[in-house]
Amino acid sequence: MNWTAIRAIYMFEMARFFRTLAQSFISPVISTSLYFVVFGAAIGSRIQEVEGVSYGAFIVPGLIMLSIITQSISNASFGIYFPKFIGTIYELLSAPVNFLEIVVGYVGAAATKSMFIGIVILATAALFVDIQIQNWPAMIAFMVLTCLSFSLFGFIIGIWASNFEQLQLVPLLIVTPLVFLGGSFYSISMLPDFWQIVTLFNPVVYLISGFRWAFFGLADVPIMISLFAIAGFTTMCLVAIWWIFKTGWKIRN
Image 1 (cartoon, rainbow, N blue to C red):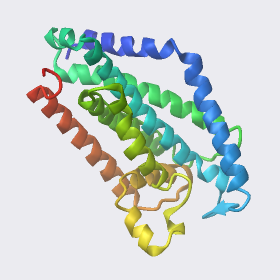
Image 2 (spheres, one colour):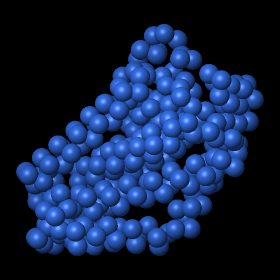
Image 3 (cartoon, rainbow, N blue to C red):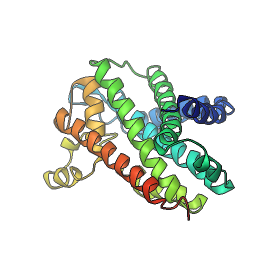
Image 4 (cartoon, rainbow, N blue to C red):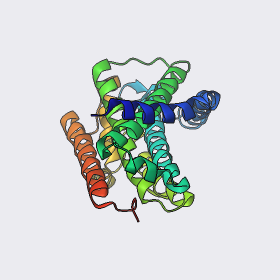
């Protein structure tokens, strides 16, 4: 393993992040505050509690998941797409660096950025509501796994995309709606029976459910199923990336 190459890629990507550190701080803080103002005023006044948890605290795990999923995809996809766009990807591919080291560098940086955003949102939410985290190891594990898995997914999107518009296509039209419909701001037990069954086909439900369980001990689906779901998604992304570098799809042509 060429750790020097991994460190170079990682530090290059993180340097781009630190150049906009103020924006990285301010944007999630403002967004989180707006969510609490809007949802707290419009919905919180009508829904005091969900399964014994105040509504303001109940939406925190979903809010964090929404942000880290979208940020992971965005950071990873842009990170690998930009070298393709300007042509420096060929210098990287001709260097004595294998595909695993490239993936670790780019995906590691994207996941780190997303973790940072998640921590900022959690700290901001703590200013609005009293947050009690029952299982810290599980909370950290779900956050790390989510950041890594969706950074891998974003890496795939960055390789697939042929222009900047396509970078936003999947996150805006597929991922974000799935997150909103995956129980981010409500429990799926509040839905009619038919829609509860339909919702279970949404893979994001399992991530949000497991993450919320770490906070409050409440879950819409069994915790082990949530773990298997995110492990399966991560494995599929790894296999897809291995195939991409093996065949050179969208990289060498």
